[in-house]
Length: 257
Image (cartoon, rainbow, N blue to C red):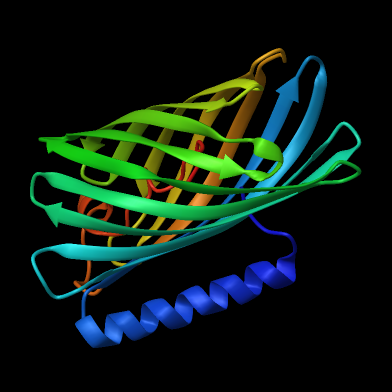
C-alpha cells in the first residue's frame, strides 16, 4: 500500500522529515528508521519484481512515556504484464514502557494497477508489543474502509527472537478479510543484522507466502537495508527496535520492513 508517483513519494517524505525534525528539536526525543527493499515474486510459473522504500519517525510528547509516530511508504510491483504503484501514510500514538508498548493507529493507502484503476482505503486499529527477555511478542487488529465497498477487518501476530543484541529473527502472520470478496493470509519469516552500532545500518532478508481466496499462493523472497536514527548515541539493535520507532504493527497489511 504505497504511492501514486515518485514525485508524490518525495513530497510525502519531505513533509515527514520536516515534521519529525521539528518534533525532535522541540522534545529532544526523536528516533527514526529509513528502509529500502527488493523482492522477487513467483506464482504458478509466473514471476515479477517489487521494490519499496519507507520511513518512520517517532517523537516523545514529554509526558508519561506517550509517543507519536508518522510512517510513510511506497512500493512498485510489476509482472504478468501489469504494473502497480502502492503507497500509504499512517499516524499512531502509543504508550511506551520497559515491558512493551500499546497504541492506536489510523492510516490511508492507495493502490493503482495499470489498466485496472485505483483503490483507496482508510484503516484504523490498535497494536501492542510485549518484551520477555530476548523475545518480543506482537499483536494487532483493526478494520478498514475502501473504495467500491471494499470494507473489512484485519489482525496479525509476530514473534521476534534476539539471538544476539544485534541479530534478530522474526516470524509473523497477517490476516485480512474483505467483505463479499474473500480473505488474505500472509506468513513471513526474516532475519536482520545490525552491521554497526556506531553507524546504525542493518541488512535483512526473508521469505513471505501470501494467499488470496480463489487464487494460488504467491512466494516472495526479499532483501533490504535499514538506517536507524535516534538521539541517544550508539546502541544495539534490540534497543533501537524496542525504544525507537514501531516498525511492526502500524500497517494493517503485511510488511517486509
